Length: 452
Picture: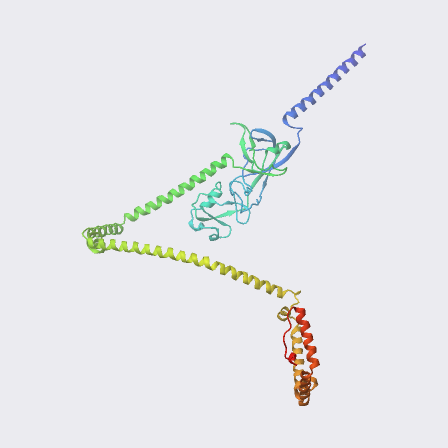
């Protein structure tokens, strides 16, 4: 009996332990669901100047909603690339890039840079109007530069050269966030170290952006913390005090110069001379006094002004006529110019056709006979013609004998005379001519042979 009671007790205890384990597992699952322990996570990072109070496991929020925790922290010396032509040109447009933190600017070599602190030593900051007046590793701080990079800290004056550095020391904070929250983190989102309440722990606060969604492993630009902003304001105030001291120093130098006896005497002399000049002008003395007090000078001056006005009017009329003449000339000469252009175009077309290797014309071959074959053929033809003429002059051949032999000439004259006296041949010629005239529609004409 006691044994059965013991077995029953063990069974009850076992069931109770199993029930407690199941309840504990369900509780862990529910708590994990509330904390996001079972959600898929990814890692992004941000670089900060300082992370006072931020530790591993600190929460990461986006607009107050927790989306992850701080995974790790490490010191890095990064180099940030940028495009000098488009960096910080305008806002929220396709032609603008924003690869540098707001306290940086894009240096001419395409790297994000920071200005070195301003020094009161003027030799270190020579005056300039653009970057070409500065040495390598320096940039000209102008009004345009200040408007383009408003958040870059600079306590000096404008129009001076300032050195910069592209080597940065940062603390890289890896942020493990829910993957589903990446749709709210964009490339223009910014991360900052803030405090959870008045006495709460430090956390990373991310702002929701409007650009392209950030990819896993991407970098979020950071914004200075409150302490950094206070230090920046302090630097600006210190710079203002330096400028005030310079102004006060200039005023003191001016006061010291005015207190000098020589300066006082010079000023008194200038005032006395001015009073004397004013008195002489009022009395009509000198050229200026005569012009202001003599009525004849006033009349002459008025006549001169009228003459100048009339001359200016005539000059305006002349210019107007000249413009009309030039307009007519331009109107008349335009057709001639166009005709000349057409002629030049035709000449150009003919030249192009002559230069065409497929052109078989004689002119093309004569002008563009690279092998000189046409010239050789022409020379051979002239040489043969000279040989024929020489043979005729020597009396060789039929033509030579006809020209040189008198007997051949006499025989030819007799033959032609016999042909002229032959009536049968005359009738035959007349018959052939009448047939040709009848075929062409003309009537018969009388010939000397009809009388015979």
